[in-house]
Length: 158
Image (cartoon, rainbow, N blue to C red; front, side, top):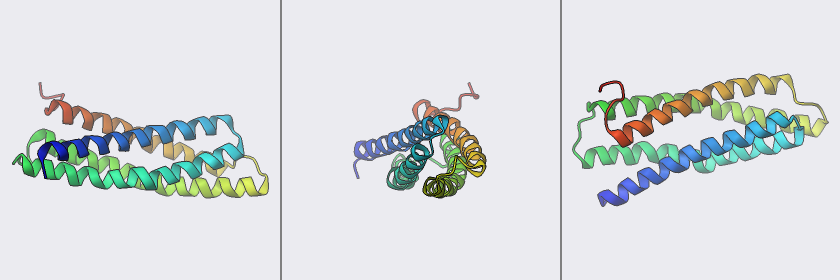
């Protein structure tokens, strides 16, 4: 595969991955702050759907295209910015996997609340706090990965 095409795929998929995450977070935050059961139920359904359609596919495509680029450029995996990017990506995915499980549970809890006419359950709020904490960690990890991809050097090694 051509280097420019592969790099374009890598950059495009990272944009979709990051954008889907930020967009989903905003959507769910806004709905949760309004405290309307129907709105939260819809938002959680949309967030789970976006995660399966956008985040999952690009989360797989990122390391595949990234490793292909490293191979194509004949860079050792021990190159500091490459090694750190791979390690940080593992951290981000380690945050994302439980987020997926939490989102599905949040969706199910809110669907039940909507069916029964109940207010936002305390269980939802507890899950939302975990979802937020893990999402914040992943967000800042992805920002650092973006830095490494652009600068191709460690920010603390200047």
